[in-house]
Figure 1 (cartoon, protein in one colour):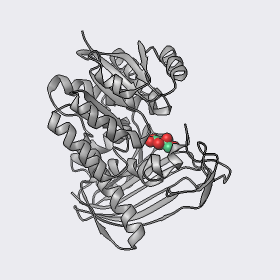
Figure 2 (cartoon, helix red, strand yellow):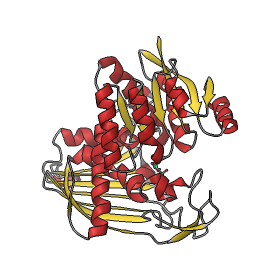
Figure 3 (tube, helix red, strand yellow):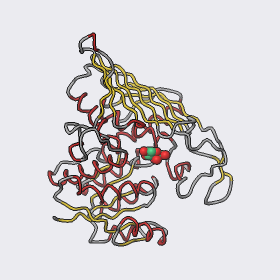
Figure 4 (tube, helix red, strand yellow):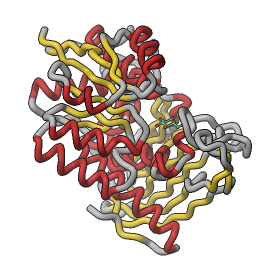
Length: 378
Ligand code: SOE
């Protein structure tokens, strides 16, 4: 089998999720190319060596430019903080590499647009790791919607709640905490958490026309890990918005890192004329489905345990009834990307799809400043 040599940049939480996906994917999916963990790149050589040893990478680099120059690398996989996505992706596209990029695609839509231009000019395969599309229950929701089972859609409701930044003593910046530093992350929960909700929503419910938003930064100053100084906080700690979709439906979105007791409560609900769907990341293998057209006496919410062979991706795993988890959504995305290369079909979400999400997050942040409804660029 021909190899597909991966050069991954970044070795944090997402580096582990991607590396794990590449290691497992060909055990469970029939592929015509075998991913090979050729090199991991990070600034700290000791940490990069430790990561390479633990995850089975053949080599390390400490300068991403060197990684991009290497002839033995086919795919540049960006698992580095957000401010590095655009420079790396644009250089990698110029070098003719395939590119996978962690979400959100960029710090803002202007940067994302340059990344789209670079990959489209170079005609290199590209994809953004919005992994939740490939949780089997979420993919099943997409199938049910595309089959028209919900009918006309009236409402879309999503939230992503966490509680890990409530302490005012938590510093900002540096490894693990760059998500709190606006200069590195671009934004707070809008780009980090709402971006997931928006990507899923655009996929399930189509384009969004306009939004009106409000954001808040609850802790205004935090010590910066790198400078040691107390600095003002530039990220949004909470972000809420209303939206109108092109299909006429109305939506609410909420994300925060200040919902005590919630760790990663990503939920969405869609209400249609005939049926409704709801999903909860804390119970990710279930899809709740209500169909008004069921016989009245037995009508009610069904809790579908998405573990049967006819459910998306599930024939590749264990036997019916045995569930899978978070990391498998990355395995599915890696499988779809490699199969897409074979068939010549771009695997969504592409950079262009990632740009669509960044247009929404830009409009949300703009609306939070202007206090007005803002049109979402297309
Ligand atoms: C933030 O805590 C975070 O790790 C996000 O960056 C991920 O994208 C999300 O899937 C889980 O939460």
